Length: 299
Image 1 (tube, one colour):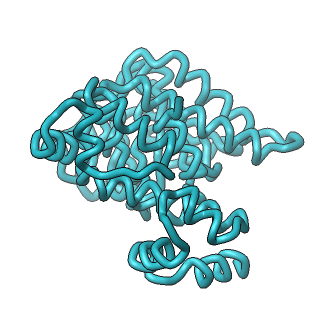
Image 2 (cartoon, helix red, strand yellow):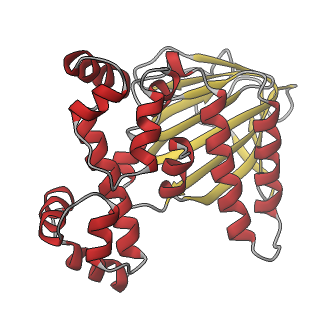
């Protein structure tokens, strides 16, 4: 049976970027403006605040793990932050190890922090299926994974990039299945927590080549079309057929990158002819499949 979590993370292709150990002492604050890159943090000891733009501060304590799949603007700070306008105190004491705040004060937090990137050029659609924020308390398995990523980042071992990519995939999947789906923002996590929608999502992922309509999906969910349509859109954030099309196109892009013939791709993602697939792909990607394949090959 197909696993939508694994499918989405696999297509996102998380790639290693930065992994570091951070200690905060006294009053400190770090403000970041990201370009939509994923951010994660594991609190080894102590506590601090994480504030995402537009949201109240989130208290992080020992054993907490946070993942933001698409971080744009956020701050991390001591519980009592420094005065507004104060210059940040940040010192790299050794490669990948940083000290924040007053070097003479007692540490109030120790954390492992990481940034990564997604290799997929369909990431906007795929990331939209993930929660805006995942916060897990008592995350022992996630803590161990972050520790392994930090250790691998600092080492120069054979196949380092492959190992890091696989560890990041496991980290994302573990974070998703550790989070409380019902409380997440609309997306795949909430959909998979819904006993009526989870089998439908697995059905879509397991066989994208099958003939799929909102009516057939509603029938398999044992709901009226209107009830199913409203529930799917409320829990996942898109209409059933938008989800189906988005998933098919994400698969199609991957197959084009793998140099699979267009006719075979059309069949694998549920289109009865090359022309129907080409028209759908052009609407979705803004260019025909052949042009997309040539651009990818040039890169």
